[in-house]
Every structure is written in structure tokens, then in C-alpha cells.
Image (tube, rainbow, N blue to C red):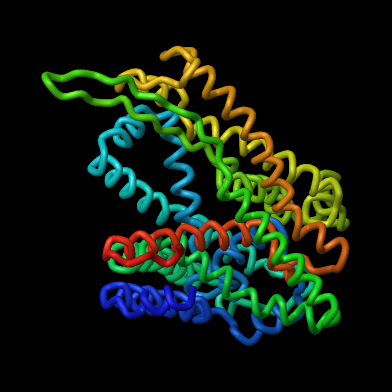
Length: 437
């Protein structure tokens, strides 16, 4: 393995790409610590020291931004606006025929969809930065644990300046990610998310060691190694549906006749259902934050219920809803991203068939049956992995400090595997053995 890594750095173009990628990641991480204008940096640091837990969407965005959200930095929004806009554009393909037509047009059509995604990212950046600043202005960003003023200027001009800065930061992140994709080792957005999450691992482990004991830290690392191994196993698992192509004669040449397969992954939805579930569960608590008590100090009953059950990740009701939403969104996302009818039609058009299954509608029904069967364990897997940080909080009080679970481990393992595959493919193109034998 070490000899393969040495071969990577001995290859001039790969070495250049890796150096360029690391340089962009360093710029991205530096921007995560530069505070936005009119933000009291000292008070923010004091609030961070006093606040131990964040929940709902704050936790998710703070994870993807590498802690930049609660720092109120110029990169506070991180990658979340782009991720959200990408998911929205992908979902709109189902309801807007124009988007589906563009997707099928190939590179030119997909470039147009990418442009729409960029526009939507900027719009979501304005919306999310406005919401973030409004919450910070009310003193609700860190909850009741910190009442220090975070903003030095709450005027309309000051708020507009902060919104413009954070939105521009989102646009800069998009550009940095595209630079990595074009001139680096690829998957720019994924690598930036990877760096944001990985940057929090050392501090999380150190916090566990300081707040608990060295034995607890060793136990957490051991559990983390087991979880990583299981996640790799599931992420690499797939159901291979055999496909046979009939032999055709065109003139004196014969075409087809080979056997192949359709790879159907156990986790086809990736981390999207977890993001959907976290976002949906956060909405009630966000709305409740803007409902102030009346003159007598009374609040609406539903606000009290939301504050009691939907803001703490260690509550059984929150866990149950979180798990059920993940399972439901997994089925929903797989259903709209895997078009069994289109796959069956393409197979029929090129003379392909599944052995024992007639072409056309029977093939479509068989694929839907396979998808429904394999999505069930995939949905349970996502739900269990997402609950690991919440369960750890209940057992050892390490919700924020438990790095080996939930969204973080899914992204770390997925991006890591994909990056190794890309480096391996580029090395094999140069007649090397590859990074992995």
C-alpha cells in the first residue's frame, strides 16, 4: 500500500493534481475561520465554549461546513445550499418534463441543468444566510446556553452586508469545488465535504478524552473501526441482475451475444434521505423559535410540545420519527432516481433480456420487485447508522463529540472509496499496477 502511495507522488501529473487539490482544500478551510463582517468574534468563541449541543439542521449544516456555521464565518453556509439545490433540481425532473428532456440530451443538457443548480444555490444562499442572521440576532443560535450579543450591528445595512458576504462565500465554494473537479483529482464538492467532516475528528476525539476517560476514548475508536468496516461492506454490496444480449447479424458481422449485469446497490439513495429527514424534523423547531411568549409569558401548547420532543436528539419520539422519515425518504428517493421502465425499454431496444424474464413490461415489473426487496435493508441500514450519534448521546453523552456515525461516516467512507477508485483508474491508464491490487 505504501509503495503504491509512493508511486502516486512519483507520477508528475498526479502529483500536480494532488498538490492543487490540497491547496484548494487549505483555502476552503482557512475561509471557515474568517468571521463575517459585523460579527463579534470573541463573543462567538465564548458561546461556542459554553454551548455543548446543537440539534436539527444546525447540526447538519455545521457538520458540512466544518464548524463554520456556528463560527458565523464567510463560509458559514458551507456546501449545504449547493447540495439542497442539486437535490431539488433532481427531484424536479420528475414533475417538469423540460428538465427530464435536458437530462437526456447528454452533456449539453446537463450543463444547462448545472447552470440552473448554480442559480438556485445563490437564491438558497440568500435565504439561508438571512435566516441564520435572524436567528443569531435573536440570540437563539446557541440556545439558552449563551446570551452574549453576537452581532455588533443589527441595522438593515449591516444585515444586508452579512447576507451578501455569506452568499458570496457560497458562490466562492462552488467555484473552488469546480476547480478541483476540472484540475484536481475530481469530485470537488464531495472532497470539500470530506475535508469539512474530517477536520472535526481530532477535536471530537480529544473532547471525548477530556470529558470522559481514556478508556471511553479507546472504546469509541474501537466501535468506530467496526462501524467503518460495516459501512464499507454495505456500501460495496450490490445485487447483480444478469442480462443477456442476443446475437445479431449486420451484414457479415455479428453483434451482441455477451452477458453482463445491472449492478443494484444496497444503498442506492446515499446520504440524501438522512439530509431530507434532518431538514424536515428541524422545520417545527425553527418555526417555534419565531413564536415569542405573550405578555403573560405564556407560549402556545404546540411550541411547548415541539421544544420538549423535537429539539433534543436523545428523546425516543425524536429518534422514532427520525428513523421512520429516513426509511420513507429512502423508498421515495430510490423510486424517483431509478426508472425501471426506462431501463427495461433500453434493454429491449438493444436486444437485451434477463434470463427467464420476458422483455418489456415483465422486465420492468421484475426490476421493481428487486428494487423494493433490496431497498428495505438499505433503508434500515441508513436509519441505524443515522441513529448512532443519538444513541451515543443517550449512553455516554457524546452527541456532538461522537464522530463515527450518522451522516459523517457515510460521507467519509463513500468519498474515500470513490477517490481511491479515481486515483487507481488514473494510475492504471499509465500502465501502473494501481493504488489497490
